[in-house]
Image (cartoon, rainbow, N blue to C red):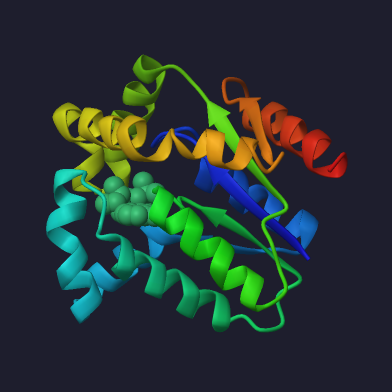
Length: 190
Ligand code: AMP
């Protein structure tokens, strides 16, 4: 089973590329950000809990996020594989994911970081904010805080996955098609 993790700062194109590639590889795309937004929109208990963190651009607490991700995987028992987009984002999440998959005799196939400059990303996110309605995309301070969360908590996962020989990077600048092709070249060579 192919289990891919897409890393990258907000705006790097994880969700867009996961959407483009999921059909090609017959994978289920799970975005924890999307799941939180769905719950917020529907005012579930989970959504209410996540709201203040998301509005500030802070990470939602680990256990809440881990439980949500595991439930979503269990909701897709017939999946041929997964793309995790925006999960794991902390060391605790990465360890929980490894444990959860190991119980099912599964493991992460590869983690792929989409790289782009902060200034390019800020521009992309502010532009997305004009149409997405996402409050966390409309304010540069919140955007920079999301980058800080990435630098503080997510970037260190690079060495975690490097030590397992599972970390790859892709240049996230270019046309959508060019970036998809880079990802396909990498994934096909795994
Ligand atoms: P995203 O759509 O991936 O940019 O995520 C939007 C927001 O959802 C983040 O800024 C966090 O508040 C929350 N979130 C998404 N994924 C996670 C995660 N793995 N851990 C904690 N918070 C998350």
